Image 1 (cartoon, one colour):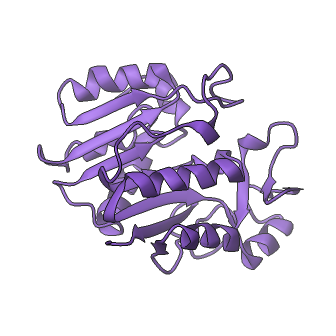
Image 2 (cartoon, one colour):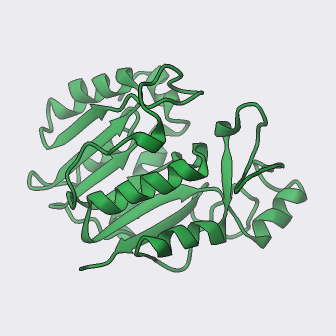
Length: 241
């Protein structure tokens, strides 16, 4: 287990959330032990560690993150005993987490060849990104996915129910500040929490040939009584040819 400081970097409930999403990758995305998986924004290995007990030596895990300290820990403590687990630093600018970053999200190319992965997933990444950056990352996800590959991404999605609940103060976040194409929880630091209209996200997937697995797995953040996780989960499949 990484030190507490690196656990906090990726949020709370380090072990519990890792185990939770391991289950989603297997049960909802159909991840097989011999497949290749990419973890975008892997942090200090919260998702990687539980997958070490699932992926076979024929399987492959790759992850990248903006935190050099987190990646160093992962290389020293995960790759050292699981050589099919690879980690890379991505020096991407983020006003909150990497203000001296070299690259803008909009210009960053995932450091992997086309059609490299069976599954690509990211958790709590798009919840801190602006619309053009999300669109670019979805382009990159499609590029590195194999035909028939699957993606799992978490969002804060705004539909009529979420808007009504948050307006009534039922949600953990209310996203009261409306901007061009998104809502945020903070005017000066909007990346602290960003939510998108659900129809906008559906449109992005359709434009890229990604078929969404229905129904959407809405989360508890908005105050819904029926939910799967905390954030909303969108699972999709790239066309097989």
